[in-house]
Image (cartoon, rainbow, N blue to C red; front, top):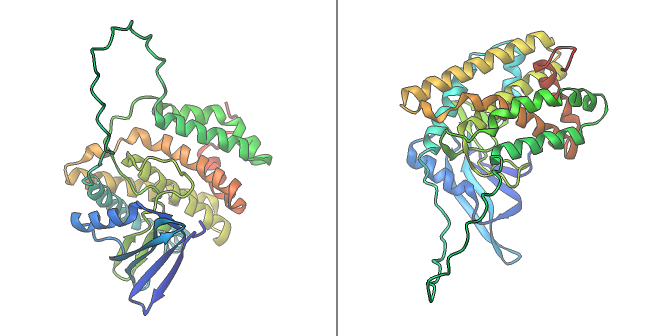
Amino acid sequence: MDQTNYSVVVAEKVVVKWLTPPVPLPHPTPEILSHLVEAGFNDTAPPYAALTGPVDGRECLLALATGYLPEARDGWEWCVDEAEAGEAAFAADLGRLAADLHLALSTLPRTAPATAPSPPSPEPPSPEPPSPKPAELPPPAAVRAAGALAEALELTGGEDGRWLAGRADRLRHELEPLDAPIASPLIRIHGDLHVGQILRWRDGYAVIDFDGNPTVTDADPWQPAARDVAQLTTSLEHVAQVAIKRRGTPPERAAAWAEAARAGLLAAYRARLAARGRPDLLDEGLIRPFEIEQECRELIYAARHLPRWRYAPMGVLRTWYTEENPS
């Protein structure tokens, strides 16, 4: 994915990320980075400072200064190397990293917006007849996912669009678990957790970029951990597609690598949560519907911003649904 901000390395000590354009305050990143430090999560670039200032009469976040990580490469480089080589042992490290991140973020308190008290009534209100019970609305997650599928179907043209339309009912079926109320805890998730946000550097791995998903402006940052997990697992599938297209990796070998990497990541993630006494953070039944929604969002992103990217989500979906008969 293309980077939307501009980063400057200063003397190989500090990285200054300039937000382009500046973002009005409050911005989530300074609070999240501060909390991660307090929670003892150190697998990120060390946060040093946030630069703010007025822009058009509003106080905005202008830049973030973090520590420089020597020999750092993002996942669209190092992870593609792993896919090309057929190596998936790294996935256990990513699973533990994601679990540790969620364990730390799960302790971030959610502050409710203050509401003004209602003024007292001068006299008791007159009794009113009971209102009819309103129709039950679908859960927000189901609405969001259904909307993403509908938009992906509308924006994806050509042979890909015809193929996608032929699997629309299958995809809707995959989203059905979101029709039920979500029972797993809602935590402050990363919101854009893909391999491109995970640096491999001289001393290990680091998660970066807590700005949220730039393609979903109305997303609630408090979500089930499964949403981050689903985005991370789908990004492994995208890496496999990149390896096929850019490195000439045979599709069967790339698909086997993605399956092994996904399994290793999830096993390590589950084990870490269990070891910390929080297996409840992951509802595995939500992973596939969130994965389907994520691939729809990748198609929307490709249609609106980066058409050449469409091969990746379409390649993943074609790998998942290989049968000739779409019904």
